[in-house]
Image 1 (cartoon, rainbow, N blue to C red):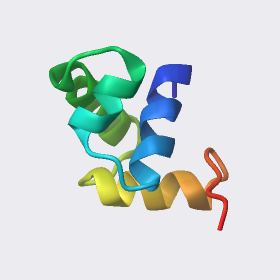
Image 2 (cartoon, rainbow, N blue to C red):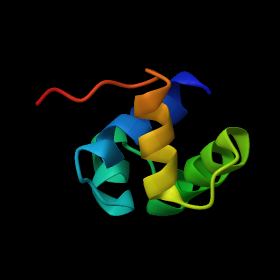
Image 3 (cartoon, rainbow, N blue to C red):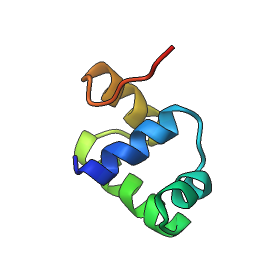
Length: 65
């Protein structure tokens, strides 16, 4: 995954929407969704939630509790 894709995943793991992520990264909501399309394909999952879960399980991203 690219650095930007990992940023998107980490923010999604913290509950941010595509619009929220876009605002924080200075890109459009469509751009964020494009990144998630790529993430989902690369991780061989069905949706954003599965992508976040798999990324956490593989230690690609961390969530502070």
